[in-house]
Image (tube, rainbow, N blue to C red; front, side, top):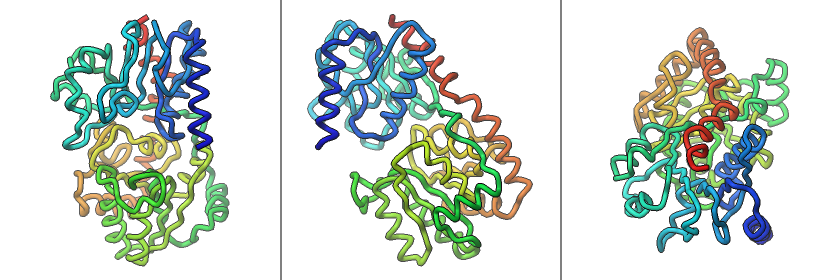
Length: 353
């Protein structure tokens, strides 16, 4: 309740007397979308004459560039959120789910939105395929704040595992996401995030290796229940400060992305930046950026055997693992927020000023 009141006061303050030209309309939840907004605001305000800030509603705003930071900030059950026609507008739409009712609003969005941004080719093609004007669909990948991520020394990694009370002689597999519905226990899985796929893979791996799973993020109840039933040990931590996530990555032997649909995920760039080898299904930015055996491994969506085999390859082949780590550490430099914010400015905002 306090957070809702706090966000409401931000809207009132920022929207009524707002001298800035670029306004990011964020989701009110302190999660990934809001983090992206703050990173872009920070870089754009430092690098360009155009100034920006965050809000949680377009009410009262006129003659601005409004960047709706997710489809949920613009499309509600009863239609589009009203915003004044004097504003220019950008929409970020990261992924399209099967039978997504929001697709029906694309004809209206085509008339109201100047640009629609997405982070991966799959969603770019989906948006165009569902009727979005191809000239309006802008592909810009997600960014990462590289100064927050690094590879720990072996001594530091041992210390982190001790702090987190992780078992010393087990393979530590990571999954840092929200993959249950709601913000509480998350007993009902979000199918697109593939928590069932992740659990199927871990159960198969446990037949050959002594496994411990490290989980972060809210609503992980489904995964925890599955691990408990399978007799697989795990640690679940809710990381309050986003910058603390770096130590959790540095405790891992491998990271698994088992999603069916993604816009990112952030875990791809974060694993690379922390020197963690990963296996991902062919979704989102993973499908665009991972080169098999060079900076990670790709597997087909829902192919439990393929994912499992590639994790086993990493665990059993140190030379291949180190090659992927080096490749990821090199490739992630391209996706600094300095570089990505420049793409946002040049490809969208500059054209709307």
